[in-house]
Length: 284
Image (cartoon, rainbow, N blue to C red; front, side, top):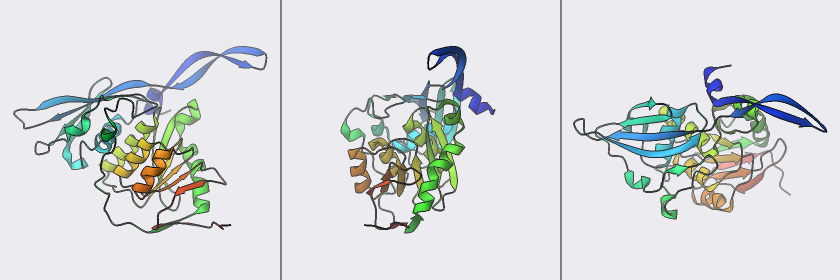
């Protein structure tokens, strides 16, 4: 078992009941701990440190989480804005920004305490939610995805989820090619953290915009997840669970193809853009 898996899991004693019998055993649980994200910015002679967020997350890929969070909240605009990303103490990540870059701290005008279940908890106002993607007006890329490829995505994601296999209670965000190849996977007890980790990793590798890929969410598609996807230029979002009404509205406004309830032989199309075709479907 790798080191990261060890830090993200905890084994606790439980009593397992099966029918009318009970026995003592141990159970693997996903670790949930707070992570403080802070930034350092300003001239070399006058650096300022500011706490930006405390989020409940599963330890692992914390640097990706911090970078992805700052990007999807529109506080930074590119990975080149960053000088260093490093832990300063336990459960604290500091992102030091380039001297010539001024962070958009107006985007941080909210109570930045979030929980693992709802990344929007603590938003100061509805206006603070609707950040604007720098990829909003880029040219649309045309591509097609076969229905057979879509049907295999959940199985591929599940097979790659070490933490879910061990705990049964952790979310994942997976980035796929249009041929169904898993390119990037991030897990977390919070669905919004899993996506921020994935976007942070993609940003650090200069992959954005993600307009030639499929983003698969292991659970439901909430408004915030679609907003984060839009920030990263994602053109196709698939969710194993249901979308919310506001998520569908945002996907439509952001020109994102959105499907939900993706299983091995079925899914619902909630929004389909003109530039993306799903092949192999016989419409009645």
